[in-house]
Amino acid sequence: MKSKAFFIVAILAVSISQILTHYFQFNDLTKGILTGLGLGLLLLALLQKNNTAKS
Image 1: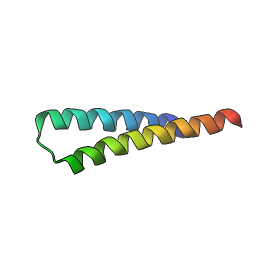
Image 2 (image 1 turned 45 degrees about the vertical axis):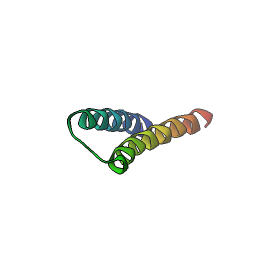
Image 3 (image 1 turned 90 degrees about the horizontal axis):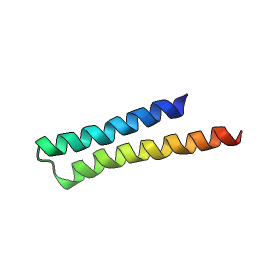
Image 4 (image 1 turned 45 degrees about the horizontal axis):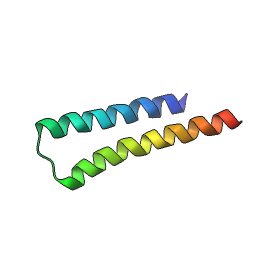
């Protein structure tokens, strides 16, 4: 159940960061943090799903 929540939050974080960078001017650090946060959560969700499948 946690992995679904992480997956949804990760997809939203990446998509919102892409939408915000389309309309607003951000520096590279901010773009990287927003995208990295989303991708990190996505990876965490996939790893949790993989661990629960093995159990």
